[in-house]
Amino acid sequence: MSQAKGARGMRISASGPSNAPWLSILATSVLWTAVPAAAAAGAALLGPGVSGAASVGAGWALIVVFFGISLLVGHAVGRKNPSGAIGMFAVTYAVKVVGFAAALWAFGVPEWLERPWFAFAALGTVVIWQIAEIRTFSRTRQLIYSDAPAGADNSLKGA
Image (cartoon, rainbow, N blue to C red; front, side, top):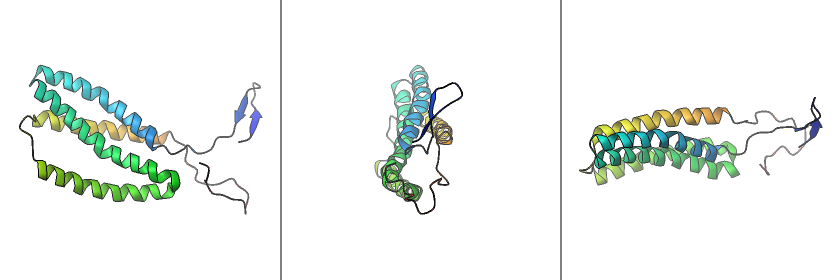
């Protein structure tokens, strides 16, 4: 990267695209959803008790696993083929929907599960997760056009 001196004599460097953002998105989304889920689990302890708190935890964990798988696949694929990450998201989504449906059908609903606490925790987690994902992704830098001269190696091999 080239460096130049800014107006105040400080060194500044040219910025490029962000590295694969998927792990950062995953960490932010988990953090943003864990805090309200912990608060909801605490509230559930006062209501239905341990089963309510466990139901909140199960709702949160289901959503974290569901969306986390996609971000981990995006990270693994995006490192070697950044443009292929979006296609893998679609494939992973289809596999997850079928896999989660089969697992829920095979295991059924546990007797301890407090359905309202589970449902509201899962719904709240989805909404907050999506907000965190969009916010985090919107702060990444995506290389759309290359400033490399014509004929230069324009690949992102080292990124």
